[in-house]
Image (cartoon, rainbow, N blue to C red):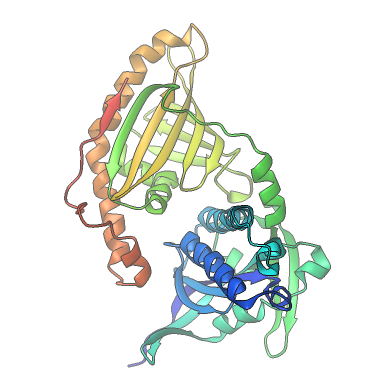
Amino acid sequence: MLPAAQPTCFLIADISGYTGYLADVELDHAQDILADLIGAVVTALRPDFRLAKLEGDAAFTFMTTEAIDGSMLLDTIERCYFGFRRRRRDVRQATSCPCNACARIPDLDLKFVVHHGTALHQKIAGRQELLGPDGIVVHRLLKNEVVEKLGMSAYALITQQCIGATDLEPAALGMREHSETYDRIGDVPAWAHDLERRWQEEEARGRVRVSPEDAFVTVSVPTNVPQQVAWEFLTKPGQRMTWQPWVTEVTVQATGGRRGLGSANHCMHGKDAVVEEILDWRPYDYVTDRTTLATPEGPLRVLHTIELEATPTGTTIHMRFAAPKTKREMPLMNVIGPAYARALEAQAPDLIAQLDAELAAREADGSPEAQLMTPKPGGPLSEHQPPVIVG
């Protein structure tokens, strides 16, 4: 029997400007630079997107899913682009080579095209191929007029069909409406997300983070999952109740449906509400919020950072709480802080079990991307160090 078509999100990351770059540079250095940059791109898109194939200066990737978490999609794209820009800058600054290939590294940029539809996942000549018209659409989108019509040098062009599979409101997020027309396909409505603008905002934005030195209370939980898996699990509101039983409901207030800087979580603890205002959002690295708890003595406001530290066998999750700013709040924190930390410590085994299950589900498909997420020898999934609480 022929396999059934599966709902699929297609994403192509394309290094733009590469054809012109090759015109008068040294090919041996150019190929090394391309291999370095495209490798960094593919790594940054994992594990959400699996590599289908490399296509010269582009990576064709996919994710099998019916509904798309829009926040995660934009986080993945932006994190990949920011990493590309930093890698491009670092490679250029680190080399003393006077050749044209090295001198013209800043000529290269990165664009993304994203589409959602269906595909037959079939092995042909020993390789998995994605067959179907939607795979053709996403490739045709590489030839577009975004630069000419919208003036964006680096962008993510996301089709309306893909936006429809998310909970995003693109206009509210500053995306610009755009449409392309192709022979035998017709009109393809889409939205363009300006990555150069987002890069400038990222570079200008200050950091808000509770450091180990500033922490009043710290709970650290060693796990054997990659940072990406831990981040997705910890920042999706619906997951909170699975390992924090005192949380009965979480609602999110977010512009355009996107979690991140400026959004707020309203967590119900029975009849009591805790408000978490996101002050800093650095996907896969850390998130900081200002947590406000209502108490009989008045509100208690505390800075709270969840930081993900990569380790040889996985990720250590650090949950840090800073001391409050006022003398009135300090006696409350002396009581509530250690008690909450003990509650988090008690639930750490449930968190670890949930993360183990998430990793096992991803590994079950046997894909190369899943195998790359497997912890190194010496850190079997059945063995965990106990959480560490300080404060």
